[in-house]
Each structure stands twice: as structure tokens, then as C-alpha cells.
Length: 307
View 1 (cartoon, rainbow, N blue to C red):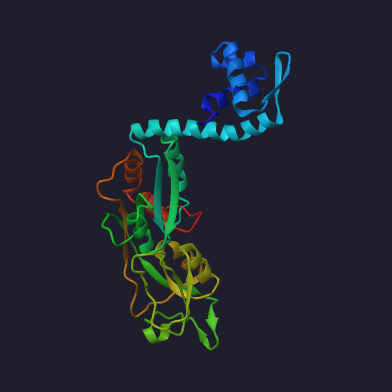
View 2 (tube, rainbow, N blue to C red; view 1 turned 30 degrees about the vertical axis):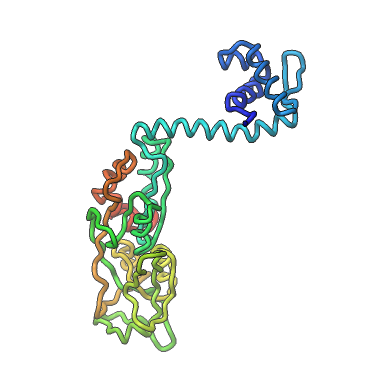
């Protein structure tokens, strides 16, 4: 049987903060004799002295300080648990995980997160970034409660379509080859000579998706769309990027676009969750994201405004 109770820890904490048994008794609305008995019983059970007595004033011993150092973590955890249990009883989830596709920038979610935390301050929020089928796999495997991603293994609520632009840095080159400026479509054989920058599918169990790559093509695989965009701007390769993300780069000449024989088809972004599951946090995020305004901003590079 445990000899240490949360009530005893609370008593020790209050005495340490107030500096005397009498002051702790006033804060805890108890009589001083109850405080003295609680400390004496705890010291007897643990076989250590927790306080040095200097008349009415007391100070923690080394053992008492160590007890309180770890004990305060327990008191905080117990308080958090009480609040979370009350939240669950009121319909709020203990933890909520939002998964976003790697093509999206999470920065525009900062305002939404701030508002959410003000409403549901005891629901722990977790953001998860996955790529391609990995986003849907996270939902299917219950590692995520809600996702924003492109078409996948689960049906969801349609948000918006995303156009893709084939682009490369105007400074990127290979010996004897330079990215042509004219608008004639490039055939597969022409593109095969170029290094492709592609986002790796993060799926662990589902079939990994490969989009826009040619058999045998030299490929530089990266973890997300932000890295892909940066690497293409640095001249490390060619690839398809979301139209909103490269709009300013194309206008400024940092990237150039080239019509291709087989363009990457538009993708539809979805908001998806598991059928039959409910919760106040899930409802809040569904309502916040379903109009697509936030998602439109998430298609832009970090620091940009709305589309």
C-alpha cells in the first residue's frame, strides 16, 4: 500500500510555499493540528524528516525538497486529470490529432489553434504531417482524428481542387541542357533527362503512391512539399508544385514553368474523419475547416496571405 497520498503532498507543498504550519492551515481551511498530524504521519511512514522547525517557521530538509520537487509533478498531473475527466464528461476529447498533407503549410493554423485552445484548454492538440497515402493511413490506424489531404483510401468532404504547375529553377542546368523557355509541350523522353524532385509517400501499410515520375528517372526524394519547393528554387531538380505555392516565384522569374505532354491532373483536397465518431473537438475543427478558407491559405508558402 502506498504511504504517500496526494493530500499529503498538497499539505507539504502549501507549508513550503507559506513557510509555516499555521499559514498552510489558513490556506487549506484546516486547523493547525490537522496540518501537524499530516506531516508527522508522513514523516513516520517514510522514515525521513521533511521539515526543519525553527519555532513557528519551517524549512524543507534535503529529503523534503526532493519529495516536493517530484511531488509537484504529481499534483499538476492529478489536477490536469481532474480537469480532463470533467471535459470528457462534457463532450470534449482528452486529446485530438489533426493530420495534414505535406503539400500544405501549417502556419495559417496558428490563429485557429489559438482560438481552439481558448475554447478547449484541456484538450491536448497534436498536429501530424504525412505525405500522400500516409495521411489517410494515419486516419485509418487511429493515429489521427481528422485529416486534410488529397484523394485517398477514405471518402471525405470535398474542400477544393488544387492545380499543379511543372516548374524548375531558371538557374538549374545540366551539362549541355538548359530549361527551355518556349511553351511547346515536353515529351516523356525529354523530361526523363531531368532530375525530378518528389515527395516520398509516408504510408507504412497502404500502397505508396508515386505521382508524376518516369521509369528510370533520376529522382531526389524529399519529406514534404516545403522542402520540394525550396530544393527546386535552389536548382536541384524539376517537378510539379501547387499553383498557389509557385505563383510569386513564376512572376518573379525564380522558377519557370514548362508545358508538358502529360500534365499532372488537378487534385481534390478533402476533409475526412472516421464514420460514427463524435466529440466536441472534432465538431469544432470540422466546422472551422470545411469552408476551405483556411486550407486555401495553407496551399501558400509560409508567410504569405490569402489566395
